[in-house]
Length: 177
Image (tube, rainbow, N blue to C red; front, side, top):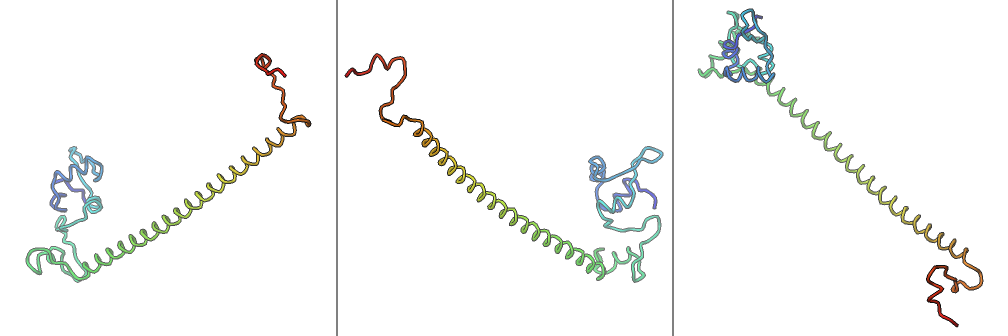
């Protein structure tokens, strides 16, 4: 299928030229340059970004549906305003929408389960941290008791109250007996 100019693309997807140019500038819509240096767009790219909304005849070839009528005939028939769609199109869109809904529901369920698992891991981590803190406190208490015992063992056996203080000023201020 030949590439379309911006004007043809505008008519095909019923989106304004400014929107198409903006999307080309931001990189949302890919384009090529023709021999004259004008921007041309592949119809598949238009379908990817906007979806072919009007589906008019392209190069004189009408799009034929399953029941043999052209797409342009189906659009203009019905209630007269060009919005008539076949039952199969509506059900296909509904099925696709339901598939999307089911997918999103499964994603929500998966994320809920993941969040619950993360909460359990966090609770276990906090419990483990608390246990380690209490264990560290017990070990520090045991160390303090052992240091006290070692200090008591190093004291002279006779009178632990009478420890001679060795210091520079203790000799001057000592009581005389």
